[in-house]
Image (cartoon, rainbow, N blue to C red; front, side, top):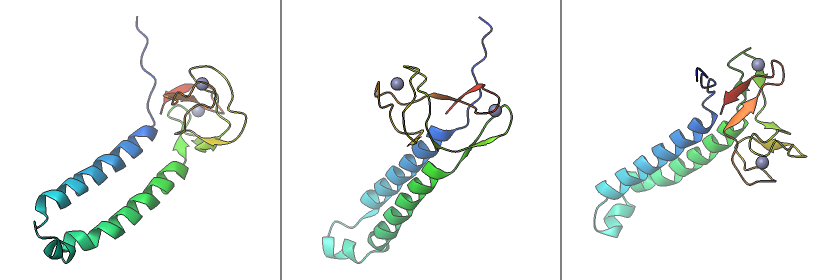
Length: 123
Ligand SMILES: [Zn+2]
Ligand SMILES: [Zn+2]
């Protein structure tokens, strides 16, 4: 077997990165918070919680829309498209985000295909 793994565009990685950062921040807030709630409510960490989750939410929406680039031919591909599922090989039937689960088999797409060069890459 000399089958090389297809190159990755780190699409799912964006969300993992965002999730890990959010969890790390929450852990930081929990671990450094004061035991007294009134003290905690007045702390800097507590004031940062709201803006932090707003920013994380916005980043999530941005990450979802931010286009991916084909690692073979460098064509910029939209993340919302009528993609073909790599598991059941069926089209979605409508425009959907690549990070969403397949409407037919409920599997998340691990790979995708370029519109132009028809080569496969990992998401
Ligand atoms: Zn391509
Ligand atoms: Zn499917």
